Image 1: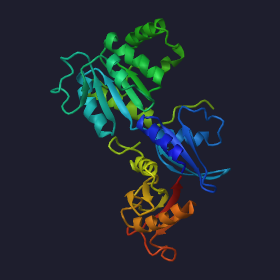
Image 2: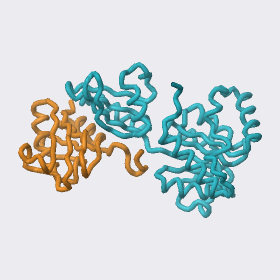
Image 3: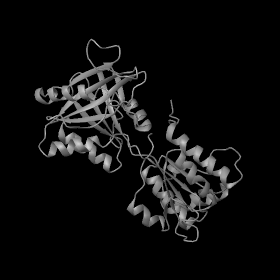
Image 4: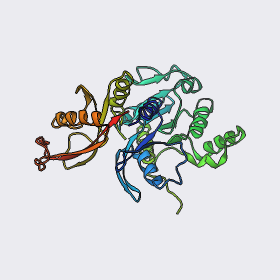
Length: 231
Length: 111
């Protein structure tokens, strides 16, 4: 392996950038493909897409010969906006499912260690937290405060950075108003359907705990299932 | 996707870079295929230097010794090679995997 290539790969890993090191098994030739690269015309494009999602390294047989893909993707994160009752149930469940969870709520009465023991908890405005630890394609965002002053900014950020899941609590009516605000703020309406609202799988969830199950189900669906692609 | 405490690639790759940058001659071994029960998944790495120092793993310790000695050859020749280990494959290698699985390991020089 070329040392320069190894350094690039390590830099990508350190900065939560997804990349695939492709090794041609016949020649030993290697190249690095990043998720944000335009690889649509690459014969291996479909395989890249699949592996960026699964994060699995592996051998691939292609028309141009056998290659090995060393896949490096950041650990999936869940950022919950709102230290509310739903979040108290969602945090432990999401941890069990293997997600790296952060809760953000500037309201110090909600964001307390007592309510969220042993969790990554930020009693600050999302604007400030996300400056330090930006969102990315391997992050899911669930905004559950019901308060536009807190929820709107991270939701717009999530749309901009292509978070793999974006969910917003609130009825259809509340969500309609939210989208009006987003439109006024200059957000491209074509990405509105990326927001899961009302939040979570439609399992008739009633209690905060059940809503947490529905939200986690949606996050895992977004993580594991390929989006429907038009034929 | 892996759990958060297990990055998709162990930090062997950082070690490979550090060793290489400090002037050591280095080879990188990667598990590229497994059959049956194999101790380390595809994509696992082992880094080796010319003196036989190593970090990481490609099996539970069963074949590391053989990979290390082969890696020293790879460092000398500068040519990558693919090794295969398995219980049923004793003609090729004196070592095997106790668990009964088989693995293929790609060993390449870092230059």
